[in-house]
Amino acid sequence: MPVDHAEKTIVTARKQRTTKFRPMLEQAELESRVVLNAAHPFLAQEIRSQRLILAAYRQQIRSAGENLRNFINGQITHMFAHGTPTAQARADFREAVSGALDAAAFQLSSQLSLLPRSKVLVGRFQNMLLGSGRGSLLSALQNDLLPGRTPLTAARLQATIGRQINSAVRLGGVGFNNFVNTTPLSRLSVNQTGQRIPFQQFLGSQVLSQLGNTLGSLSRSFPGVANSTLFANGTINPTAEAQAAFANQFNPALSTAAFQLGSDTALFPFASTNFPALQSTLFGPGTNSLFSQLQGLSGTSTGFPTGVTNTFNTAFQNLATPLNSFFSLPAQANFTLPTSQFNPILNGTFNTLGNGFNNGFGTGFMGFGVAPTGFNTNFGSGFNNFVTTANTNFGFTVPTVNTPPPVGTPGV
Image 1 (cartoon, rainbow, N blue to C red):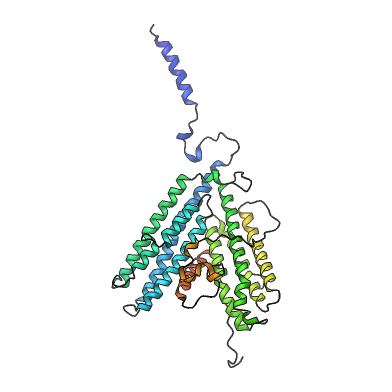
Image 2 (cartoon, rainbow, N blue to C red; image 1 turned 135 degrees about the vertical axis):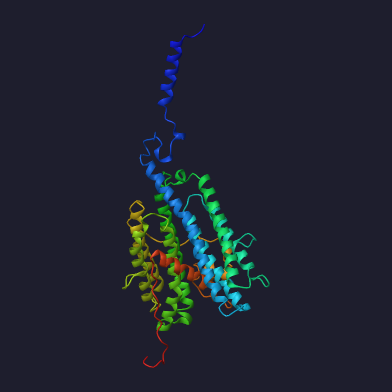
């Protein structure tokens, strides 16, 4: 039986009303979606915070590539300063570039490892940068200096290496975006009890954990290195020269710890407000900074291990307190460093780089130890120069160790 015009009008109106007031989440912009779950009243703010941090990650990947390119360009200019480089100059250049690339890999690995479920991603980045395969950036840079393959001019070599770095940065960016697009970062951001917490808060807890791991590893390495250098052969009261030499040995290690902390906190908006306090704790003037305290401990072997432990724990407390507040983490009365089960940032397969530089020549902390015979110091210089440049950008100023003149110098 046919439906008259009035009935059709009523049916159509009902359908329009039903459609008009139904919330369609999949058609809304992320920040303007209707929040149906009252348990997440700050969803829009959380989304914006996550986007800013992920954008900072992408910027850090590009920045690491730019810093590496600038460093290598300077090394190339130096290598060609007196014409065609000698075989030794090429070998020194290879080591310096390897050290700088190692530092860049350490930086990006530290940052990426803060993310939940990032172990595979970190491993891919490390292999892409430091791996022995033909596709790694290290292999590509080393191959450019094989006999018969070096361009005739510095400009050509700079252009060749620049293209390879740009390619690595692009691949790294693609890999990072794939990880972000396939990993439920918000759902995986949980505390130790499994309760979901804001993304930035989760990363903040990872920053503190990584800082504790780094300072704890360095603290454990101190007595062994001191016994082989500062207190060698049973020395109880080392000379001023020995103390200065030891300070020059641990100073780059502190600089590396600052480099990692600066790299991590650079991912967060407004985190730079903490840098003055971090600088003061690590390298500040006076006798209360970690650098000054460690220098004071090197005067005698009596109580040295205990003094090192207390000094590092105090420094960790002073560093963690402002960071804990910045990341809105639960208040803690004490921050104590771990004493075992340290997790190295770089995969153990890369410990052979620089004749063992990555495991501190056996101490466990990068570059902090006694280098073996035949170690090309350009590797350490490349690593430390890359770190120093980054630290300057972060606002860290590492003090210079004043080495006393040798005994017998006029006026001494």
